[in-house]
Image (cartoon, rainbow, N blue to C red; front, side):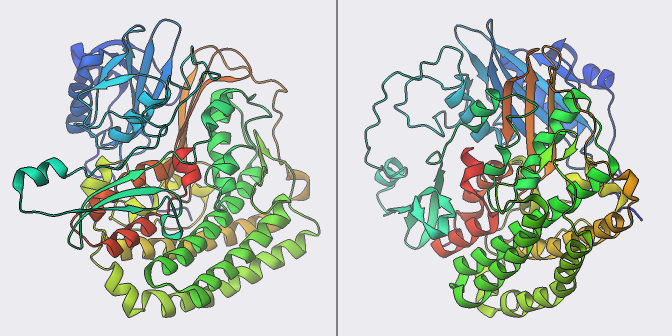
Length: 553
């Protein structure tokens, strides 16, 4: 029995020709990618084009914005799809002048374009006209040059002075004369920020009236490092370091999927089952830590619930260590499969995994007794951090954040890969749209991951020995055709983890762009926090389950 398909009633599928007819004169050329038809437009028609695709064709999910520089031009690519039908995709390519790279901002149509375009400006150098907050986002405002530009001088000196924080409401305050606000720095070094995150908060009394996440403290140029590595051997170790909260195999799968599709590499069925099992174990480990840290954020429960979650995460880590040989930076996937088969003796591995799965329902019942039934937690999370579904969609929210707002969107089902479509499991959603709903989604997803792992163990246990092929025959050197472009994504622990790659005919990608779910999800924090109290903002941040290594990349 396979997973139940989403309800696509009312969703109309458009062919590339129909999309071309819809765009009409707005499209001045074609630049098709492996995953989707691509249409080239003028830099001053971005808003009109995207609004037409959203309102008239249903492309309501701006999943990623990619920017890059060529020898003769700059280019922005807007990757669009539908929450109701993930298999429908379209790429909008916006070339900009080499000497004066200016393009119209898409923020008016999709709020998620705000941060994506700021990153494109920061790292590549494209300016976005009519952008509401056209500043750098990862690097200081005083930074000289754009690190992913072709002429960037990495040896040039940089002077980064400390600046006094200003009250962003000062002008309004002086004009009105009847309001007093206080500027509050939360982070960047604080346990409740879940990493090196600085939240600039303005309070009116005890209420949050303005909140801005300030990222960039952890930036490691992962995209640049991947562009310097070969497809076949040198890129795969890096994805483990993006979402490093036990989610390594999910990250590795994101790269494996995009590279395998680009190079037309088939993965043996046996290896797909192993990948699916390993990925769901990683999802469970990541969710366990999210539950424990959320309890710490809400009511300081370290001795009981946090340690319970670490206990269960540790059991998953032990199974993953048996499988991969590592506890965190697994480096277990390979293009075309996995690096080695299940550990011997297989019976012991299966028994250890089944013992964990058999005891999991009792553990989850304990979580509900101590956490979801806790009156303090309910008072702190029910009806706080409300994120309406249409707002979540505009910001490109995915994963438990979107499903906690009732959005029935999961790439494992909606854009099938691995062995998911052959297994029996359910996509979990909650309609509360609040901090409590996001907690419930993660707890229920642990149950669904356990169902998937159990079915994979059953399959692997009975798999004929002479058919246990762990890797397909992959060329030693992979050189996709010049200007081959593709965007592919998987369902990571935090949401849609996607990668755009462009080939230039060599054994290294010319452009490697990471679409982080945490990056887009974190954008929703002001929407969830403004008008509420500081403790509610902390709860909302915890409910997003971000990891800064993936936000900054």
